[in-house]
Length: 136
View 1 (cartoon, rainbow, N blue to C red):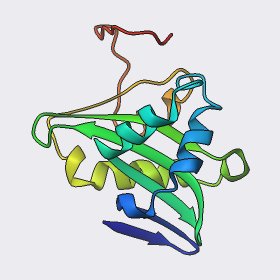
View 2 (cartoon, one colour; view 1 turned 45 degrees about the vertical axis):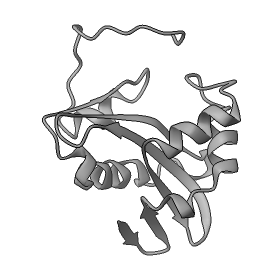
View 3 (tube, rainbow, N blue to C red; view 1 turned 60 degrees about the horizontal axis):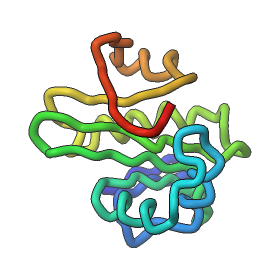
View 4 (cartoon, one colour; view 1 turned 90 degrees about the vertical axis):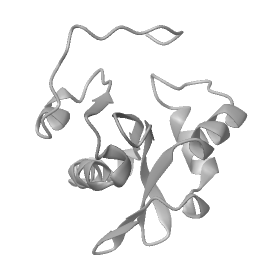
């Protein structure tokens, strides 16, 4: 799938993915710092990655993991600092939720600091979630 908005465009085509950008970007985040490159590559191969570009420059991505029937987990949401505050997060969420992998019973995501953005798309805080793993 492909969405266009002026000089910006989003695609779910893994051939367009700049894996170096994804890996370097994730290494700057609180949730994926130190994630090995081979793990990033495998995670991209086994999920849907929406990549956002300005012309041909990667500036944002969001990864979606799901079963195409009951749930989709929206994760690894990243935007390059030079492109924050331009409404690209809202547009990316609209594209994520329009993607067939998110046309399911439950969409999940986790955030430490962007609750306001996701609440605009009917996500609600839920204290019943449990997790197991090495992240905070």
